[in-house]
Image (cartoon, rainbow, N blue to C red):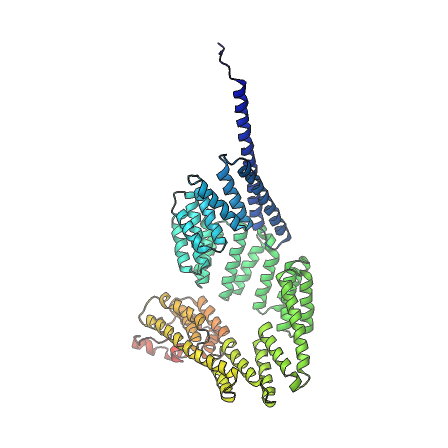
Length: 593
């Protein structure tokens, strides 16, 4: 039976118009979202290849263009259909696109607009999460914290874990590594989906900064077990190599880099890996092998950042080790021509200029004592500040002082002051520095450089007092039998805060001793003995550390009596313990020296 009811034609037209209008703004947003998803995909592809490769740069330009297209499409919804149900979606999409483009101010405007105009939106938590990230990226970390904390406590499980991860990363960025580890571990206990890789990577990085190398290695190996994407996979393997290098395990470092070369998905990183392998061979003293690798990199990667870097490193060897300035200049020129805009290309250009200046100053200095004196100072300054060749700078300043003193020149106190600074700051030879400064004060008491020398001596005394207070604090904790972590943090900070104090070397030695004896960790002990030798080569503790590094002392001491203290304890050790191996303990104990 047919119905006699008829729908008016005008109603049909209005309904059709509404449907068409709805389809138009939905289609506009759908196209914007499709563009955004395509940009996201291409961005992730670009992040998973070597950052300096040509294809990577092309990909970056490509995905940035697609983000802009997504912004333009979504903006049409806001401009032409401000009452549609897709406005909050469009605001969120535009804000996220601006974030990935690095336009954080524009991103924040869109997230705030969504927050203000759509307080009941189902997208609000996500918008707040991205607002927190944008504030952080814009350098407003303190404003980001409460925003991310609110998201971390929200009921939206999709973003609570991500927000708490960001808060842990904020702690790490601020240098609060212990707090960061605590935050990562709490997040790990909550078992957030899809975040394990980043959490373990964060824990590994924080442990690395705290010089807890074995724990860092464990964390980074957990990262690799989580099957990370290419970029994180590669960076994690490099971090493992870096730790092993600090521990002096160069064979294991090479094995780590060689494994990278066997992974097909990491092939875009091959040139960089070869450069790192060459550096390890240099550390091993196998310069010929390193040179072969550099030449292979140059041959296989012409006119790239990698070939420029290889030429630059060859040039540095020619300049610093071989002392062949002509060869060095040729290689620096090759590095510059290979890729002028690269880091190595720019550094090579600067080195070329510096070597040219050095030659001119050296020629001027050779003209005669009086005429060449000022040029000789320029030579010394270039050795010190441009080339970091401390020994050459010191020898040149001494020569300048002898000439200036014989000529009764006003430049003599300047030379003495420079010599004192080198001893104090570069060579960490406190005794020689004080002797030089006192000589300057005695010979030129009213000279401005003598004023500077007096200030340095006064500062040294104040620094000594502060350093001694910190060392005694650690010493008291050691004598009280607390866990080594309770005093190691103090001792680690002492050389950083008071690098010129005589106690800095002693602190490093005590740290190394503790790792060898109390923590049964000879690998970490080697690291700190090496730091001591490198940073304070002229101290008696460096001499003891060198003996430990060269011999089997680390193996022996790890098996010996752990109750023997390295420094300043109340003499609570057992009489039998004190008698056993007394000679050995006295020769290696910083409190006895």
